[in-house]
Image (cartoon, rainbow, N blue to C red):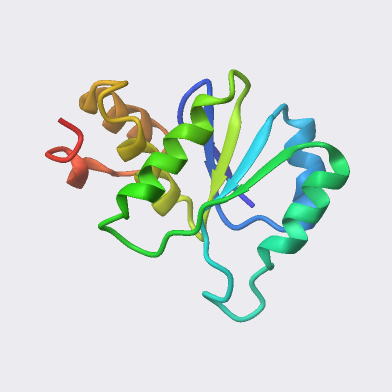
Length: 136
């Protein structure tokens, strides 16, 4: 698991496992948003296992699986709605963190200037410049 801070409120990570949840909680995250559908790869942790550990440790867990762009409007809206509930940092993840970062940026359209979203993602190591027109 590799965590990259995008903003004070959101960090993106590579695939996590149930064993990582305690570390995520200790790092101060209030919630985890899983954007990776179950079964993309052999030996990928199942979201139910991660959710069970999150519940056991008292950290909120949300499953918003997305495959590839273009992202369904209801998934974008759901991501934005979940993020709006938290003042504390939230960890978003998928296989590499890129899909989650793309979905995060699109969900923030109209709330944060597009250039700022692109810059925040770039600072974390994610190139989302291909979304520039969509984020205007």
